[in-house]
Length: 266
Image 1 (cartoon, one colour):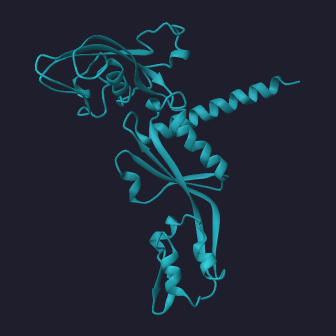
Image 2 (tube, one colour):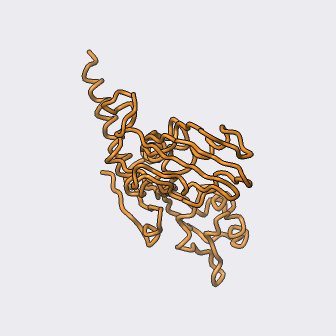
C-alpha cells in the first residue's frame, strides 16, 4: 500500500511542500507531478480591452505581461468556463474583471489593478507592467478566469519535481578512495581515518549516475528504492497543500470517468 509522509523541517518553508511517497513506482510519482502542474485550475488574465495606451509598448506586449501575473485564487468561488452553468457565456461565477487607469510619469505595477473580488488579486503587487513618461496614460479592463496548465503556462500553479530514494552500500573498501570522492557530483562520500564513508545528510542527493559504482569496480552498490521525495513549489496562486489536494481530487475524478467508460464497453 502506498504511503505519503511529510519529512524534515523543510516542509515548513513558505510556498513549498516536501513529502515522501513510498511503496509505489516512478510512473505514479510522475503522474502526480504532471497533475500538480497541469491539472489544478488557477486564475489568470485571459482577455483585455484597452481603452487607452500611450506607453512605449504595444497592446500585445502589455497583454502578454498581464497574462503572466499570478493571481490569488479562490477555488470555492469560481468554476472553469467549460463547467459553469452559464455554458461558456461568461458570468460572475467563472470570470472576474480587473481594471486599471494610470497616468505618467511613473511605473505601473500589477498591484495598481483594481479587482472586483478582494480575494483575487496579484500575488506580487510590485511586478512592473509598464513605465509611463510625462503625459502618457494607460487604461484597460481585464477579464480573468480559471484555467489549467496544460492549456497555457500562465495557468500553472507550481513547479513540482521528485527524486528517487536510494540505498548506497560500500561492500568493500576500494583502493582509490580519493578518486571516488572527486568523481561523485553530489559530494556524498568522504574519506575519514583512511576509510571511505557516506555523508548521511547527503545520501538523498544521489542522482543515480553510478559514477561511484564504475569508479570502484563495483565495490559500491547503489540500489533504488520504491520511494520518492517530492517537492511542490507554489507560484503563490494557491497554497502547496491546496494544489496537492486538488490534484488528487482531479486524478480520482478522471479515474472514475475511465472506470465508467470501461463499464460501457461490451
